[in-house]
Image (cartoon, rainbow over all chains, first blue to last red):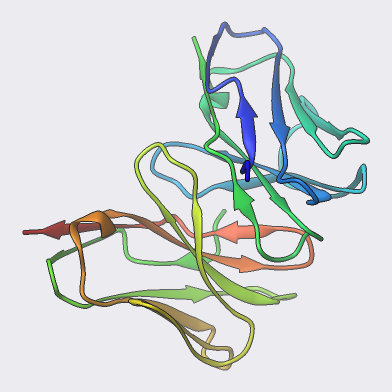
Length: 112
Length: 108
C-alpha cells in the first residue's frame, strides 16, 4: 500500500518567489494536514482539510494557503517566500482528522 | 510557541531503558501522542494515550496522567536503531501540537 506521498522531495527557491507543494494521502483517508518543521524544532501545524473544507489553520501569515481536491489530494501554496520559510514541509493524512496521522517524508524547501 | 516541555537530549547504552518525560499546558486536550523521527525522515506514530494509565506496544510504553498534565514514553531494551528524535504531541479536534523533541542517542 502506498503511504502518504509528497512532491517534490527537495526544492530551492529565491526570496519573493512562489512555491506549490503537493500531497497525496493514503487511499481512503479524507483528511490532510500540513506542518512546517524548522531544523531542531517539532512540526508546527499550518492547515487541516477534511472533505475539501478547511477545518483549522495555524498561526501562519496569509502568504500560506492550501486546498484539497475531490480525490483528497492537497496543495500547499506559499507566496512571497522569505528566508525564514526554509523548512521541511510535512503532509499527514488520517481517516477523519483527530487521530491516527500518517506523515509523508516531506518536502525540503530552501529559500535563498 | 510550543506548550509542551520535554528534555532536549538523552544518551544511553544498548539494552538500557530510557524514559522521556513530557509536560503540557493546554485546554481542549484530547490526548497525548508520541512520534519517532529519524534524521530527515517522516515522523512515525508510536503511541497514543487518551485516558490515564499505561499503554504498552512491544518495547515502547507510554503513560498519561491528566491530573498532573504529564506523560512519558518508555523505551526498553534499547537498540542502535532507536537513535532518533522523539516528539510528544497533544491532540485536539483537528491538529497535533508538538514539543521540540528529544534526541535519543544509543551507544554500543
